[in-house]
Length: 238
Image 1 (cartoon, rainbow, N blue to C red):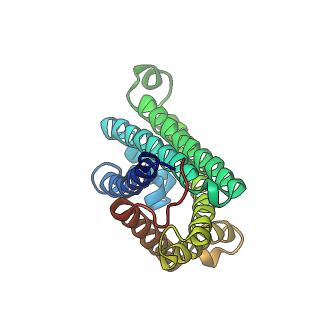
Image 2: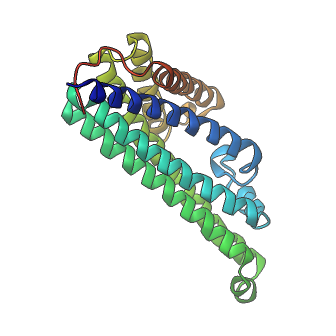
């Protein structure tokens, strides 16, 4: 292995780390300044969200393009992690890559639904063919589709991250405390989201806040470590 190949792997690790941090920052900024009131995943109130969307055409466009940017970053992260971790377990690395890209596509589908609502809100054809109540119903259908695709995306993305953290734990490329916590947090998110469809108690705000915080700690820790340090014990090339 040449020094150039080693540098490339370390550079890729840093790119992946900062891309991961970027997705977190963009998501937070979008929630605070763009998606307030028009993001079903922040309120779970279909009727109120659909009504707000019909009066927020420009913010809907901004939200959709933010989702597109997040999709591109997520695909880059998934592919980057595959190249970094494939030597530690090709099957799991490939599995995580496929799950991560599929989760990104589901998120992109949510962006399509958002643009659909913007079209329903601003297009004169819809305004002339249907009344306000019918437009609200059409918007609600898109909102529900966005909600379901988002939650399926979280489950798949969390399982993909669990696979990556498992390979990090096995390879010791990052501190095992970070990778062990990442395995726990990722599985916590995936199992809680699935289980609360059968056990309503798990859908309470306390559980939601708990798994969101655990996941945030895991992803921020991974992103910062990789962004600053790259990966440890690198003894293979791409």
